[in-house]
Image (cartoon, rainbow, N blue to C red; front, top):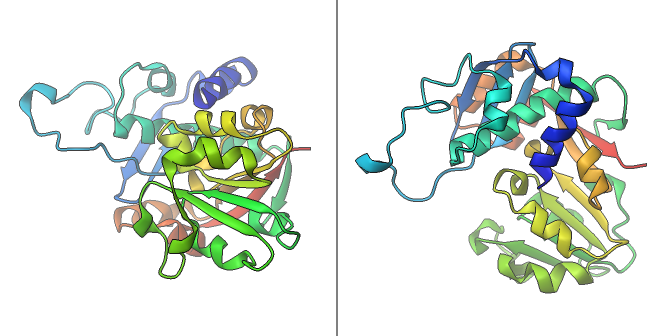
Length: 267
């Protein structure tokens, strides 16, 4: 899996960086979550909520990586845990993004500052374009008269009014992705562990973009798995980040007040 391989890459190539790291603070909001590590690095991620109610006594958990047990935990313990929950998946990706932010800032990759991936691709040449996730702002940017656009989504209501015609049920990905010239994938697929199947279904030669706050990983493993551009997030005002998270901030709030968009290019 992409996340497991990324963790293995970090353990091999950046072992000294992560060995002593601990979780300094974690803030989980309805839409977004954020973490601060002991080296003052920050990571953000879309929040993955567990399905159903977790109030049944038999499934209650007061162990590691549950509320009141997160701050101070070693990063390695989190990334190696076999426990599974929406909270743990959210926290893992946030931590990997925080670690990655330190590595990406060292200049080892081609980074385009203050850039959105939608600006990096040709949208005017009769392409089959597929989005995984309802990027409504992107849909507005794609000329409908020169492209065939489809949006794979679990929830049709995620598409803004007037965009319903582009909706395709998410479970149709095996039929849609192989025929696509350009695929734009939400970083939330890293959190909910669906990105591997999506990338496996994409044909060679397709231009693949993974974007959104959750996709701020070191790019090596994604680049080895067909991804051409990563739309990443750089936190520039960490003092405001946790306030935004606690006040139900969404990605557009974060980019407005405390982060900038960057693109990491696969050369």
